[in-house]
Structures are given as structure tokens and as C-alpha cells.
Image 1 (cartoon, rainbow, N blue to C red):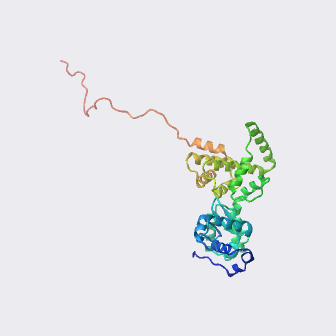
Image 2: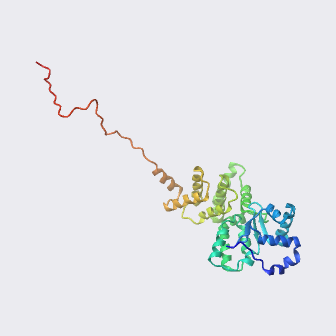
Length: 319
């Protein structure tokens, strides 16, 4: 796809640009729409240091103008951890024609986005329904994680830059103070899970995320965690949480801390119709090689071989 960006003349008629932006703001906005890091989806990686270098601004000036665009103009959103920037009206101004090449390009670029909340942010103003639906399909991958956040968030409703930060906050607030309290909390969780499946799913998600981040699978790879959590609801396992944790344990033991390796294990178990931990343990027990012990039937001659045609004469040597 050609490396150029088009700016509509209506850009200069936008009330925000016309009435609220300073000359510095207008230059910065045009830069965000046309710089070399821009993508077809309106979400791309860029550092503040690069912005300062390209524009000839100081780092302080870049920070000030970005805060103005995020909180006052409200036309962009920026994740400082993943270095991803999203332009609110990109889809409205640029994504008005579909077609296979365009859709393939959008799909490919959406897969690279780490902070999937930015996909939802850009999708809302898109007017082309086919393209908007594609964005929304990627947002659905984080439905389970978002449910977890909504249930546990009690006081703080402010926007969090990453899903990972919110999950860590939830996890840190529910740690038991001692072993006795932990046992009581577990009993309470078990009883409540029978009444409310959402709470049970919440606990399963928390345990999987804790294991993922505590065993070197990665903190910032939110998309991989979301794909793994799909196995809780979309699998034939009778014990989905336990099966996922066992697969991750196997990956750690083999030093293969990758989503593809864990998913490969889960798929193999499904193909073999191994749906519980007990079935897996029994299967692997039967696969162990059995050492056979027995006596060798091969015989070896002792001494020299007797020549062919030899006849034993017991009277030889007698007179």
C-alpha cells in the first residue's frame, strides 16, 4: 500500500481546529496525521523523543501539547508503556471504503496492537459498518478481562493506560492476610461460585493471569493473555482452568514460555479427548516405556570348534 496520507480540506473547517487550536497545535495535529509511523488503522507506535526530534520541539513542549490533545481537545489517546498512539477520528476521515485488500491490511495491523482498548477508542466514530465491525471483533477478545475489571473496581473509575495495570491492582487487593483467612476466603468463593458463574469465572481468570505474569510469560503481552483466556469458555475441557494451568506448567518445565506452545498442548489434549487432569495423568502414565527383563537365548561355543568328519575312537592308544 502506498506510503502517503491524505488530508481533507475539511480539516481546516473543523471547529476544534478553527477555534481552539493554536498554531503550534495545528502543526502537531498535522504531524500526527502524516508522520512516517502512521498506519491504516489510526493506531501506531511512536515515542515522545521522536516527536520532539521531527518537530524541533523540546521534550517538555511535546509533553505539554500531548496533554492538551488528550485532556482538552480529546482527539488522541496515548499509552506510555506500549508507546502506542490512537487518533480518535482516523476511521471517520480515512476508512470509508472497504474491499479485500483494505480489510486484509486492517486485520494485519490490528493484530499488532498491544493495548486493545485503543481499538475500541478508534472504532466508535467509524461510519463504514463493515470496517467498524472488524474493529469490534478485536474488542470482543478482551470481553472476559473487561468483565473482571468492572466487577472488582470499587472506587477508581478513571481511565487506566493498560489492562495489565488494572488486573494487578485487582490481584493485589484480594491477597489473604494469613492461611486461615485464605481457607475461609476459598470456602466463600466456592459457595458464591455455585450461585454466580461470573464470580467463578473471575477467580479462574485471576489465577491464570497471576501464573502468566509470575512465571515469565510476559507482563505487557495483553493480547496473548486474552487469547489464552478464551479457552475458559470456548473449549470442551471439563476442568478448563486446571487444564490451562497444567499446560502452562509444562511450558515452563520445557522453557517454552510462549502462547503458541501452550495452545498447542491444549489442542493436542482436545484432539486426544483428554478432558480432565486425571485423564491426562493416566494417559502419560501409560505412555512410559516398560523395561523387559529376560535371559538371552543366544548360545556361545566353549573352547575350539570340532572339525567336520571327526570320529571319536575310545580305543585309540591301547595295545
